Image (cartoon, rainbow, N blue to C red; front, side, top):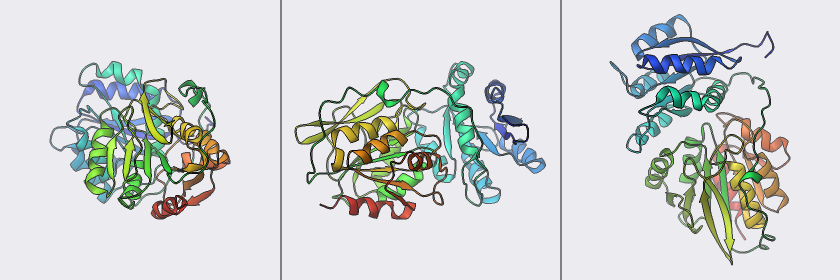
Length: 362
């Protein structure tokens, strides 16, 4: 990193001394990140923030004197700062973290209930990526940080997961498939898009970068808000009109064609573009299985996951859209897809639903 480039200053808030120490070690292994301080509870954190405002906060949920969600809401109303939630996530507790995302948190880091230090150390790259994404995020009342360069690192592509092509996609038919990909800031962006879809909309398949357990609660929450049926995808699920399938956390999801019908395949595999599920894996599979019968949308998020897949979708005859910079929490993924030449049209978040519906009219 160039000497003149400002480091991302992070405040760690967690009641566990072990977590504070481990997180400090993990984050400061990256030359672009500096831990400016730690706090055992929100009251100690508030005093530290009065002295110096951090670029990013990592915040535990369960803490003494004040829980993390309450502190997050107070923080966003008074001094908006990008926050990454760091919590022991169980299936029962995932709804709490959905509340955190709705309150303004930009991402979630998981820590297990046992073996916390080992887990955090083993997932150091993902943790540092989450903090870097948060540093670029637009939060309520705030603005995006200036982009920071990162050293290129070798990443697997979707070829590591996708089976060899099994023939050409069908020519244009009456049934369409919509594929959406998002990361940082995507939970609320996806909610806005999916809430605007009618009950008879074409089948939708979604990859949102999320941890294990979180996607089920996310799908359940969306199902109460949307006219379409929303569920976490299960291997072999058909893609049906009026239904949204969300890739489960920790699994890749691909589209397959059997005769004239589409199904999803959910499987394990290596991280692709540092993610599982990966947007590239989904998009490239949709390009191969559906071709011109597909619509692809890349939304807010950091990194380049989905960029190659968007290009393949466009080359296969699909309609392709990217969320615009002004409405993206982080403009990384849409920007990379645009740079790769895979985007037909750049669209504000509030117009994405109408654009994709228009594109599916035969």
